[in-house]
Image (cartoon, rainbow, N blue to C red; front, side, top):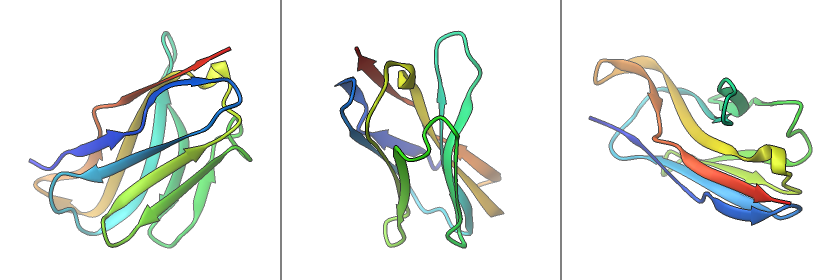
Length: 120
């Protein structure tokens, strides 16, 4: 069973920066979209940023200008670089892959989540 493995979360001071990484534990092919979502306590999970296979990116208004999503094609790894972090960025961050074809019976994969806490 292929899983997405995230890393890079932690405690950061407001104004600081961090980089999250996400890579599959096995082979995933025909990736259509790679993305990052986040869920703060008591709130719904929301899209932070995603990147299509064609190279298009999409960012939540709340992180535009502060976040950059990128991909290492050779490693099928997706990164989220965030700067000028704010306390309201505190959340569990999840990576997400969507594939055009079924991979092990699935077309959508989620990571286990990594906690990002921004202190004021």
